[in-house]
Image 1 (cartoon, rainbow, N blue to C red):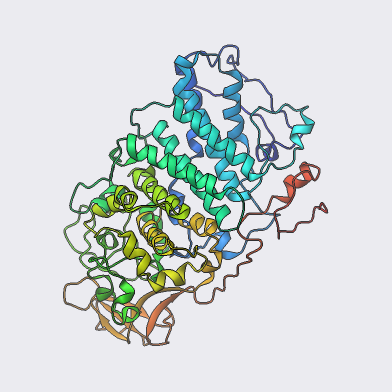
Image 2 (cartoon, rainbow, N blue to C red):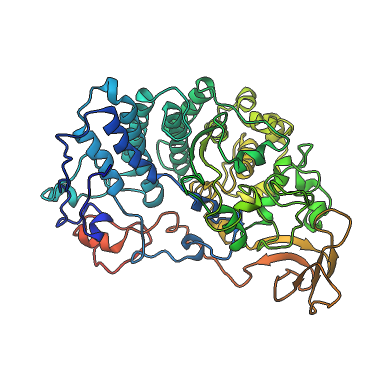
Length: 574
């Protein structure tokens, strides 16, 4: 089935503000609004096109303070400019608004497709606000003579987010109750609402902006409704339930609310395992230090915690560590032998999350599903929103964070203990955190969020909403080596890695890394791996939390589009 074609110039596809574009062109075949949008089948075919808006496998490689690789993104590298700024594109919104203008079915027929349309208009605008802040808000398909609308100024982000939440309320009202891994339901709407409202609430709170509590309450309420009535829970099956959640060929709807489906029969594949190795993606020591000991105590309380060799560093920790990072004893899915840590990762901490059978390790060879919304995130949204509001109780923790910890048998989080015994590492990692009676539990919820949701596309945005951007400038440290020599990296009692400043001895048959060439250590011949040692990241607190508005779009708007604070361009507009 062919869909309506948008015969637009390339610049028009990037913006609704190019007044010479024909935004109302009719289809080039027999379909038209008069003959389409009249049956459930037709509506379903149209709304299926919305799903391209969702994240894909690239989110796994999004760098922040928790993981880095050979090719840091534009935010980390300081490469954003008004001349090159991207993603100011509006074609996906046009598709949604076109649906609302031309739908010709009774709500009894159109309800699930209406729900999808409301959901994806909300999703579209949340992504735009998160990136650019204030943006122009449209609910109609623009015509080429809509000069005033085409040259519209940016709407305040609060106004836009309020419309987003209204759309999500409609998606919830109209959505189906039944679970569906590949279709939006009322539960997906609640999950997104908790995400959006938490983002906006904390964005405002950590900048002293009004209405923070309004959005935090909305986040908590949406998450509580999800927890109480959706029926979703934390997946606990198997000996490694956290690892299994992300290397499964088919996502399970016990916990996963919405997933991007892949399949070898349809030849829809991804390259996550390939990219992890090929790009040398590695977790940072800062991230690794978030994992508690298995008994619930701080890793920072262990004597000489910052000078432990790899095998000792990862021993006796939260079980999610060994289900996320390649540790001694790791056996890949379908294999029978242990895979040693050969320092392929740029920091020495190699991710195994999303890694399945070795047959899927090649480029475009993997077809495991990619979870996009899951119950654990909603639980964490609930706990964080209530903690930031100051209304969190122990019962709230037991209904949320502690359900997540139960998956791997970790001790429960105690609100009293969290607030009375604060980990100095967490204070160091999040210096801008709210100073209140709940500071400790907020930090512990951030710890939980960091490790539970790693590589799922959240960390960069969490750092931005918490106003902790300066933390991205810290050095990227990795595995510690107390001296040159041989190391046992797979836990079999035999050395399999040689770290030395000299050339590789002819007699050495194991893995070898030459100091100064393959790796850099903080102390020269000893110390932590220092990944990307020559990179100096800068952060402008007054500018860098938002992307610049593309200069070309400001020109097309005749200056109606204002520029974000701190960014400059050559448009000569104020």
